[in-house]
Length: 245
Image 1 (spheres, helix red, strand yellow):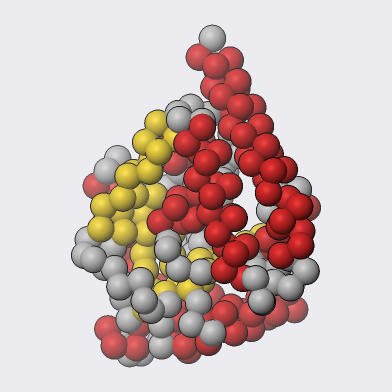
Image 2 (spheres, rainbow, N blue to C red):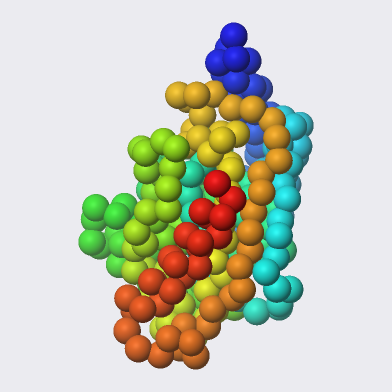
């Protein structure tokens, strides 16, 4: 019976996302024709589609900041990844215009496709040319003073309950080469409410708890090669992750 209600909640949540998106689609379609000109407006609509659909489904967000964040400067935001709700967590958190780097499969999703064809950056991690283009686009995004969200684990793993998996080097290289601070973000329990896409265990309403750790400027704190900054960020995020289990 519990699984039945969780499956029903998943259907309701997805229906809310589709309804909110459908209401905004005519405007999004027009804005997406000139994404650079309308970048901030597209980000605005993405944020509110995420926020309203989550709120209607009884999903709320609670953020704990290790220290105040200066949102006037760009960051490479590095969250762990266990749920499709992680997207809502980031859109709710970040007041800046920003782009996601995400898997190319999102170009096939009817909701996310319009954003990944306009303001976000798709990447096929099994294709070197696609990875190179995504890295170049990420570099250009940071050069424009916009923030970038990169899930350093690279994907939602099949392991359940999830753990923090080793990080890819991409986000740390981008931060170092552009002298931009990394903002580690630990999303503690989104997986419990909505693991992956919710298809296996269903979903449920609740409060997603998020820890926003102190920003790390790689060239100032770890001025050597890429692996040390990966290790430092992983260590801090894993400590926070394990502290809430």
